[in-house]
Image (cartoon, rainbow, N blue to C red; front, side, top):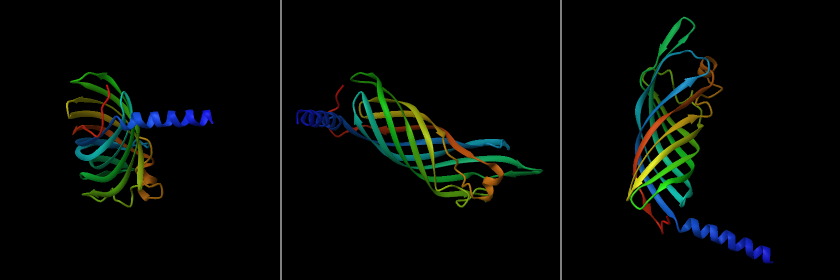
Amino acid sequence: MKKLLLSAFITLGISGTALAQTAILPQVGITAFKPTDENGQTTSNNARVGIQAGAYLRLGGTFYVQPGLFYQTTKFERTFDIGQVTLKTGDVKVDAARIDLLFGARVINTDNFKLHAFAGPTYAATLNVDDENNIYTKENFSNGYLSGKVGLGIESGFFSLSAGYDIGLTSVIDENSSLYQITGDIRYGGVYVNLGLVIPLSNQDK
């Protein structure tokens, strides 16, 4: 019984700490993502500027968990060879709904300035693919793909600025598509910068 009560108090203490340090972080930003294929057939691979918008829920203080939901539009243009034939895409736009699960820590923590480091997995569900030359299509893309995210963020008052890098972990191309037979595994990743707000829902401990 004592062990049960002790476990209950510890659980309540941890839950209370998390609830005592809760904030919503709405963010909007720009992305520069591009694909890379395992067969190395790409002769040019150029990222275009995309956009993303969403929000995180931060639970914790010095160390925290931060789930988030975002809508993102990423763009790229590439040229690749298939035998003696060279194919060039137009500007390819990929719309996706993304779920993040970040784990972070405050590296610098003062009243007026905070520096965060964070990392974690992210899953993007493909909503639409638009290619001016119809090389990449929604049918060629997988329904969703996994990435790993790492980055840094700074906060001052109610404002935040963060930047990071997404590392593709699974192929964005459907393994059953004709394009996959040509390009093989294609990973999708790149850099991003977000500007946002920090809205405390409860006491923010130092």
